[in-house]
Length: 173
Image 1 (cartoon, rainbow, N blue to C red):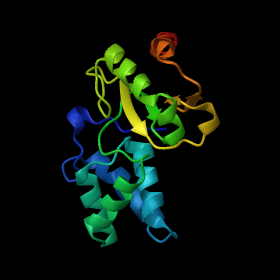
Image 2 (image 1 turned 90 degrees about the vertical axis):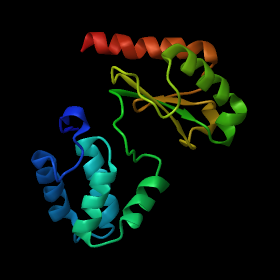
Image 3 (image 1 turned 180 degrees about the vertical axis):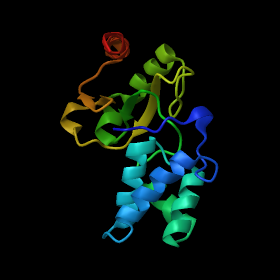
Image 4 (image 1 turned 90 degrees about the horizontal axis):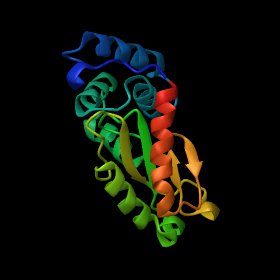
């Protein structure tokens, strides 16, 4: 993944020529493909890391579609985000099996340990915590996804271990 460095979240392509160049390349390459909006949004998120309101406006203007259509796709699919995420993500499944299995206790423990609420990122940009719907691992409920690794049958006592594993991973890099 090649993330564009955005100083102070300069997320308006009209004010950031590097970002505009990246978006134009993605838009030109994919504008005629079937399902082009999903393809474009996926590529933008892969390159930039998130899809700001300004980027949504830029895409809508380029494709000559209402911005509400772009926003509708982004707000419907949980893998899209409109804000920068941390270097690492901890996603807590709140689908039925995970919820019944104790997801809310996992979330409470993570909030206590990390000091942020769901949907927030630590001040150092290290960890973002998010709720997500079913990840398809119901037999492993409750599930926490750290970056792209699924951890199943998680107990509140394991949350500290998951946080430590993120920290030790960073020390090794």
